[in-house]
Image 1 (cartoon, rainbow, N blue to C red):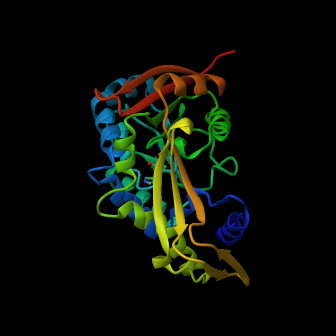
Image 2: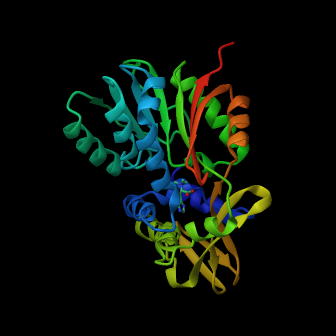
Image 3: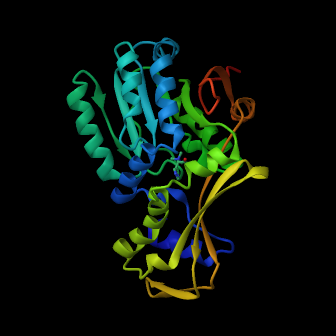
Length: 305
Ligand code: AVJ
């Protein structure tokens, strides 16, 4: 479904909810890059350190002449650490919903890795299989950043199952954020500079730009909190007053305090994620974590029957 239809349906639903994939237009992708550099946002920095430190071991497990398919590739920065360690990687296939972002990142990669075949695919892989060419070598999935955390456990299970199908026997290297002190989680999604708030509010700004909606950004508050029984951060946009928003010939009414759920970010234990991966048909073969156990990277191989 397109943004207009999903947004309208999400605002009519109760509870109101919009999928986080709609954050990532050009402005939202830029705001996300700024989040990754915030002192409070530990996942990016921690995952980079893990990649740096263990790239050789990862490359060994992946093997030579591989084709790397990155899901939700964004700026494709992390994969460079992997590409630098891999032996003769054949092809890199970044898959992303944001086309502008993807083309720019692919151009930079081609000039930095002339021997690599860079084949970007613009696709919403949450809606179905991306159109991949026949594999150029052992096809290995790369899904860093704990983006898997955006999915409810049931959807995460289904996505992991589908990855197994699309990768056709290759492995999956996946980054997963870990449960930890709620205060640390809270700070990571409520940064002092307000970048996460701007990222959240960009959903409405995008609707104004693309759909001619009339969201008054000052009338909405960013809300992010940890929900311990669900092991997830929830982000919401909360109406500061009674208001009406219009777009696409429709009116949407909000009372003061009404909220629109814009994102979940699930946190796992290492064992909890491995159990999920097993249920999805994978064999967890290696896991790397930092000393403070903030973040994990898992190497999964398809379970041979
Ligand atoms: C890209 C989904 C991993 O959940 O931490 C960052 C997105 N949202 N700050 C996350 C996000 C608010 C991020 N993921």
